[in-house]
Image 1 (tube, one colour):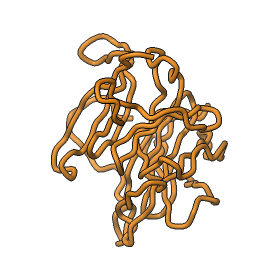
Image 2 (cartoon, rainbow, N blue to C red; image 1 turned 135 degrees about the vertical axis):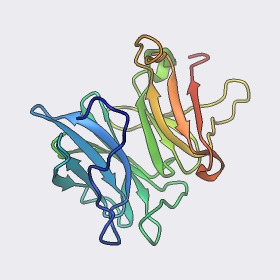
Image 3 (cartoon, rainbow, N blue to C red; image 1 turned 90 degrees about the horizontal axis):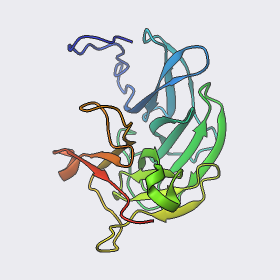
Image 4 (cartoon, rainbow, N blue to C red; image 1 turned 120 degrees about the vertical axis):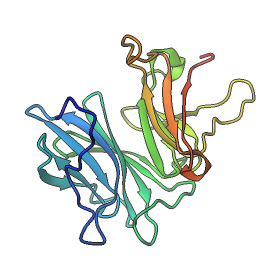
Length: 223
C-alpha cells in the first residue's frame, strides 16, 4: 500500500461499462500470506478481493442469501471478515430500508463462509460493525451492528449471533437513534492525536439525507 503522500489517485475503476460496480464498504485483512483489500460490491452482489497492487483476484458471496440482497459492508474483526447484506433497490445502487431487511455473515479471509450469524429480525440495512469494549459491561465482547436504515445499534453474541440488547439512552430509556448511521469503531488506545478512547465506540453518520456529516462517541453509563 502507498503509505505516504496526500494526493488521492484512482487505482481501480470498475464503474464502466455501465452499469458498473457500486462499492459500499471496504476492509483490509491478512490471510496468512498477504494483505488483501475486501470490497462490498453492492450492485453485483459480491465481495471483490484486491491484492496490495490493486490487482483484482477472486470474488465471493453467500450463495444462500435471499434474492435481492447484496453485500453492503465488510469489516475485519479478530481475524474474521464480517459481511452485512442489505436489500437492493430496482437499480441495485442503494439499499431499501425496512425492519428485517438484512443479514450478517462471517467469512474467513479466504472467502469461505463460516456462519450465517443474523437473519432479518432487528436488522435494517445493517452497515456498522464493532466488538463492544470491556467497558460495555454485560455486552462486552458482543458484536455491535449499526443499522443505516433506522439508526439503531443492536448487540449480538459473537459466536452464534443471538440477540442480546439494543443500545439505549441512559436518560430517556429510548433506543439510541443516529440518523444516517455508518461506521462503528472502538478506540485503539493509541497516543493523541491519532489514538482513541478504548472504552468508547466512535461513530460516523451521514445526517440530513447524507448532506451533512456527524462524528461522535458512545460510552457505557452503566452495566
